[in-house]
Every structure is written in structure tokens, then in C-alpha cells.
Length: 130
Image (tube, rainbow, N blue to C red):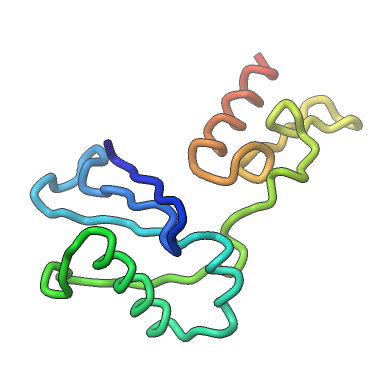
């Protein structure tokens, strides 16, 4: 499995990037996402260094690992990374203009707030066109 979803943790998902196509299978790289609520609550309160410490502490506790297992670490923060797709109002998973039937808009904000949601929204819009 390429992705693990965690519950009751400040960590949300752990993605095995090295298992994706055209990646070095011997270089174990992971992307770790924090829990959305925790990220929102702490965005203005914690520095990047504090976020790093908190996430690493949680990772070590869950997987019984140590700092020596981490070779490189890179932290990014996006205040508005997760769109509120629950309130998009697009039951079809995309938007079709009422004024111009040739205009379609799709994306993760129309369907589910992740990569798969963006792909599904795009496929639904494409199928509506053809």
C-alpha cells in the first residue's frame, strides 16, 4: 500500500513516494501530511521548527523510530491547502456554465479535496463533454 491514513493523531497521511512510478525504489522517501484541524489551529501559533518537532515526535511514537532514521527533512506550510469541497454545491463533481455550455470547470474544490478528487472531477467533466 502506498498510503496510510491515521486517525486520532496530529498526523493525517503518510505517503510512500518511492513507490510511485519512475521513483528510486531503494531510496525510501515519504510525504507526511498533518491533520487538517491541527494545522489550522496551530498555523499562526507554531513556527516551522515547532511543527517539525511536533510531527517528528508523533511519528517516532507511532512507528517506534528514531531521529537517526531520518536522513533529510523538508517542511512546507500552506494555509489554504485543503479546499472546502463540502460547500461547493456541485453534485456532479464539476461546474458547467449556464451562460456558455462550452465552459466547464473542475478540480479538487468541486469534488474531494485531494489528488484523486481532482482527477475524478476532471474525468466527470470530460465525460460530460463527450
